[in-house]
Length: 593
Ligand code: ADP
Ligand code: MG
Image (cartoon, rainbow, N blue to C red):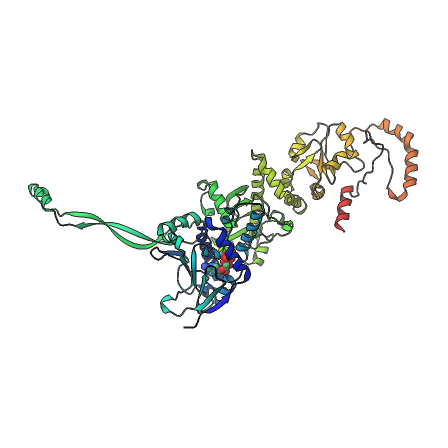
C-alpha cells in the first residue's frame, strides 16, 4: 500500500477550527446540517455536470445520502454518491479555507462579537466541513471522483495542524463513486451515534434537501409463533371440546436493521402553497440563503400558459453590508432549477433587472433545456417572459409590504432598498407605473414621517395641478429655501428631495397620475394665481432696476426678472427652465472630483 502523505493546513484553517471548536460549543448539532448540505451539494454538482458529461454517471448507483450509526463504538458515517473529490481537490477543499459558507461565518463571528452578541447566533451561519470537529476527534473522508480512477482517504484529528491523504487499496473499502465521511465521536458526544438521535436531527435540519436521506434504523415486525401448552391451561381446554384441536400461539417481535427514508424529498416550491406554513417558507429561506433573519415578505406562485415555472421569491430583512452592494449585482440570490435540477445561481440581470438584484428566491422552469448555458439564457425568449413575470411578482410582493398594517415593515424595507427602487426609476421606464407608488419622501408637511406619492396626491388642493418638489442637501436647507415661501403661504405641500439620487429619479418619472413633477426652484413656476394687472404695474416700477442689476452682474446670470413668488425675501436665484437645478449642479460637481 502507498504510504499516507502528511500535509499542513493553511493557517486560517487552524484558526477557524479553533474558533469553531471553542465557540460553537452549545450548538454542536449543526455539524450534521453542514455535512448533509455538503453531501447534497456534491450530488447537485454531479447531476448538473452529468447533463453535458453523461459518462460521469457510468457507475449505476442512485443519487442519495445514507447515514449509518454505530452506537456501541460512537461512530457516525455519512455517505453520498455525489461528485466526490480527486486528490488535488481534497487538498484544495479540506486543507484551505473554503469560500462562501466559511468566509461568511468568520465575518458573522466578528460582527457579532463587535456587537457584543453571544455565541448562539453563530450557530445559524454555515460553518462548513470543519464543524465535524465539534463532535469528532478523528474524521476520515474516503472519496472517489468519477474524474479519477483512484479513491483517496483524508484523515484529520481535532487540534492538529496537519492531516494525511493516502490512496485506498483495500478492495473491501472501494466505493463506486462519492464520499464516505466517518466521524469518530468524542467521548462526551457519543450520543450522536444513537440512530433515533440522528433521525430526529435529520428531520429537523434537512427537510429541504432534495435527495433522499436514509438512516440506518432498527426495525421490527411481529409474528405468531407456536408455543408449548402449559399443563394447567391444557386441563381447562380438555373440558372445552371446541378449542381442543387449536394450537397455542404467541406474538413475538422480530428485530432487524434496515435503511429508512427519513426526509421528504419534494421541494417546497412544488408543494401546494395552501399547505405550506409561513414558518416553512422562512426556514427554507434561511437554510437556502444562509440567512439568520426571517425575510420581510415571500411570494410563492406558479405560472402556466406560454411558459411554465414555479417560484418562491423573498424580500430580505436587511441589505447586505458593504457600500458597493448596489453595483455588485452578482449576488447569487436567484437559484434556477430546470425540472428540479439545480442549474445555476450565477446571474447578472438575466432573470431580474439589476436594481432588483436584492430579491432572493428559487425559480424552477419546465421549458428550459437542462443544459442551458449563459448564452442561451441571455437570448432565450422564454427567459424574457419569465423575467417579466418575476418582476411583476416582485413588485406585488413589495406593494404587499407597503400595505401591511405594520408600518414598520415598509420603513425597514425603504431604509434598506429604497435606493434600489430609485435606481429602477432611472433604469426601467417600462415599470414606472409599478415603481412610483413605492417611493417615499419627506415633505414640507411631513418632515418626520415619509409619505408616498399617493398620499401627496390625496392631499393636493383642488386647484393644484402639479406635484411640487425642491431638491436640497438636507431637510433643513430645503425648509429654509426662499422658494418655499409662497407655497407655504398657500398651504401647498412640497416634496423635499434630500437624497442625491431623488431628483434624477423624479425627473425620469416626469409625472404621476397625470400630474407633472415641478421643481419649485425653476423659473416660470406657475402657481395658478397670475395677476396680469399687477404684473404690468410691477414691470413699470422695477423694470429699470432689473436692467441695472443685469448690467452689473453681466454673464454671471442669464437674466434678471420681476417675480411674484417671494413673500418676505427681497430676491432669489433661480435655475433656468432648461438648466440644471442648483442641486444637480452640486451633484455634477461632486461627481467630477
Ligand atoms: P462550502 O460547502 O461552503 O463550500 P465546506 O467547508 O462545507 O464549505 O466544504 C468545503 C468544500 O469541500 C466544498 O466546497 C466541496 O468542494 C468539498 N466537499 C465537502 N464535502 C464534500 C462531499 N461530501 N463531496 C464532495 N465534495 C465535498
Ligand atoms: Mg458546506
